[in-house]
Length: 111
Image (cartoon, rainbow, N blue to C red; front, top):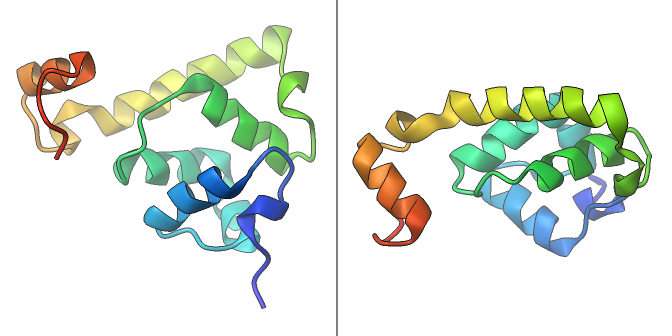
């Protein structure tokens, strides 16, 4: 029987539901993918990028409290997060750059 994602430190029911929408249904699957690939899957499934959400996953997979992320480690994770976010980009979502900017402002309906 698969282990629930919420069994990983820092990850609760809301995160588990978001991962399910991204096709990730177990702690084993999440661990196998790793934080970066799993976060890409979340964004591709429609989760809005959020740096804290990303590093909470990284820390949880390491068995560490989310607020343990500080200093140089946090800076390195920010660089990785920004690179992941850039991989998803507006074009992958099927929107023009203008539509994506309007979406970020909350002006147009999300697809």
